[in-house]
Length: 321
Image (tube, rainbow, N blue to C red; front, side):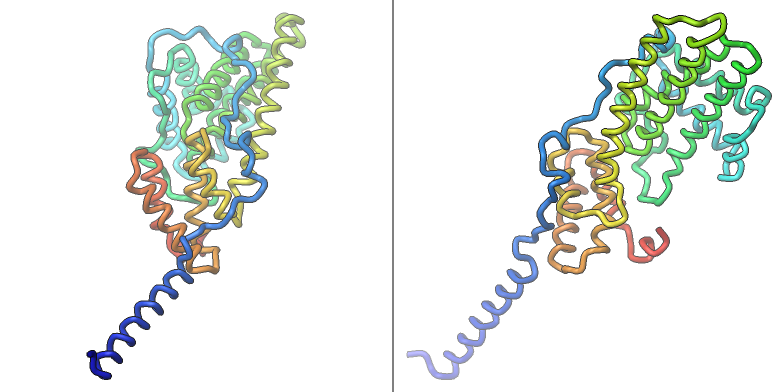
């Protein structure tokens, strides 16, 4: 028979084990991140957002390859000649775009890229996925390039050079469409929509008046313009769910697991990095960390990089955002 002393030890050990198990279950409880809201519950939300028709009719004929490299070169050229936000603003707001040597050189590079095809799956402007930030620097630079070129096209229209204007707007359209198709990050593809919008607005002016007035082409321009607005509305509606100050962890996890578009999955991973510091439940925080850790060791290298950034986002970083 077991002595009273040994029995007491066994009872204590059992109680400690049970207590530890109860504590673990209470804290982790399956480590549920939380349920998604109605915003991401539908299958349609997880489907890729596309354009009803392509803008190839408004783009130059492309042969060979190398467009992606030229877009990256133009981006790096802007960094060299406008490294600061103030310098970029100066280019972005120049009222004499057709006399600005930086803008003219960027136009030559973007026009050359428009005559080439894209041979790579993704056009990347940084070697790794950037760390989360309030204002994406890549998006800002791309917007400066395409906005400055749209201003250049407008300047050509004012000075009665519609053919030059058409060349610029067509190149901006090609740039926007390529970034939309081959961009990886949400901010890059958002800037692509803006680029196509500026280009189609400029082309609409060209085919609405003057020597290049053409009702048939104007009709095609208007159709694409309407389609682009629909796509932009869908994109911004989804962006309001994903890019938010207080992301819902259950929604972000739902996107990470089920969205058919890698761009949105990466964006949701970034948002989980924020959510980790916003939740009050230790169990929920640990569930987020566990999911990010799984992604960091997963097969997709872009999700790996995004998860690494999210896991390394500190409370101090959050205070600066």
